[in-house]
Image 1 (cartoon, rainbow, N blue to C red):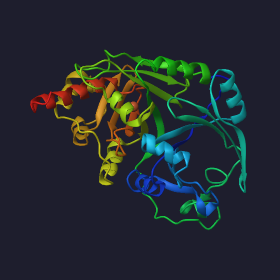
Image 2: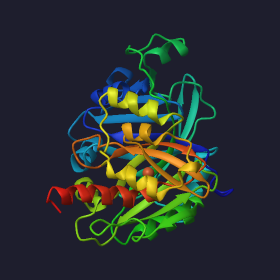
Image 3: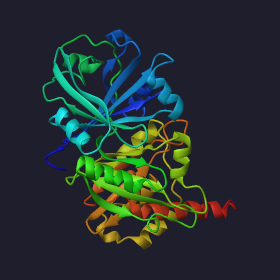
Image 4: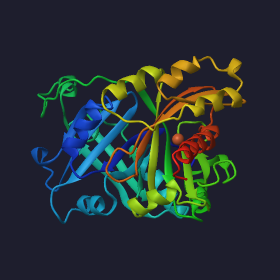
Length: 377
Ligand SMILES: [Fe+2]
């Protein structure tokens, strides 16, 4: 983070989806998000509808197009449901935009003042990897729900003193607190280009680099660089596929998303066991962990430094990794749409600023051992 580009945190993540009403229902019932705002035909927006949901500090916007010519529909047809915008909160959206363009960014939305009953928001946006954008949002002079043009939904309507446009049953939060990191998949040979982009344009620096030795097995390989703002509010790992004997998971993503894009978002919790138990009860499916994984953990990590009951973690298939600074607990969902593209990580950190690199190899190898046992490798 530099003085020229101060970023306060994530403002929201906007997804372009095929059916925003149903996606909002999924994030409410499965992930425990609370719908807070809506824009669409009922609010005077003709070509799209957007649902805004929140949990902790996390804010998702789910947008669907309403006519064949809509760019949202075109995006969804090409990529399936996916992340269109990783939006950052900034103190000055015009200055952020001018600064980014001066350093070589491509603008997609010149600074615009959006005004409404509860004040004004200034928004601008630049292009990032693939068809992903970064919006800059200054909402310091706005007190309404999400942005001007949106109307309160459900309980947020009462908070605003208005009759809610739409009423929805209250959601039950599952304990998600913040966005820990947002991971991009880019094409082979492009990881450094995008790392440089975040260094040059955003003033980020490299937190860590994983080469294909760190994240590889005999069959699968990827490389990753993590760019961050220097304070930990924004962490953006960038993956590219590496040469392996089989198609890497990064290549599979690129084949189905048809361009670079957001691969997964890690959502933080203070109690991963409780959060995962509730998510599972709500029907969220997670990647299976072979029993051999926990035998590996006992051999790999110094368990005296990890204040967790390993049997309990195993019961919930929660992964654990440690480094000099501490440890972390994590689990990965299955993709949340039909294409094998976007998925979620749930993470609980205890000092470690890592990303579970020890797990990648252990997990992939454990899975491959099971494949081998079935005669499929
Ligand atoms: Fe991650």
